Image 1 (tube, rainbow, N blue to C red):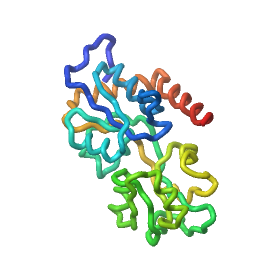
Image 2 (image 1 turned 135 degrees about the horizontal axis):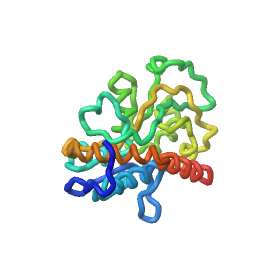
Image 3 (image 1 turned 120 degrees about the vertical axis):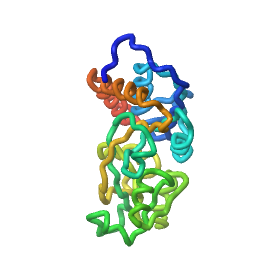
Length: 236
């Protein structure tokens, strides 16, 4: 589906867009939601012509709202088989890898995910890694605040910490601790991330939003925003 110039948008209630604080993908600066993914979503909605509100919330609340509330969507959401039928999907807007992080001063004999079955893995309650590991019977210790996990790891309260990151970029992790203390042990999964919308959002809206994202990929907007926030990272 291509967006024709001047094509009117489908009349609909304003969309409610939710996200978590996850720099540089999404964060608030001077009360404005910005970030690499935040700006992609806002530009996409402007091109599609839909009214919306947008806010940064704790992840579990943001995700639950999109599951429960009509005309509500959440980003950046990993598209997994467990979630496939819960949402309508707009994207992908980016890709991520899931990594087990461990203490730099500890030796791990972990070469595959199954090797970690005897270890206690810290997760963020309700996120995709938490769901993935629990569904496969791993010993999971979920935290209500992901920022608690590096502290728990350094205190030996967990053995590993499951995190999601973009293109093997660990710069955001340094916001919480001396990055030299915690190191990658195993990359165990690759996913694409999306704007996940409540099933009440009409198919025609989803198609129009996806068409707007396609136009952004073709005209270089995705590349420009990715580059913009690479530079942002470099100065933090």
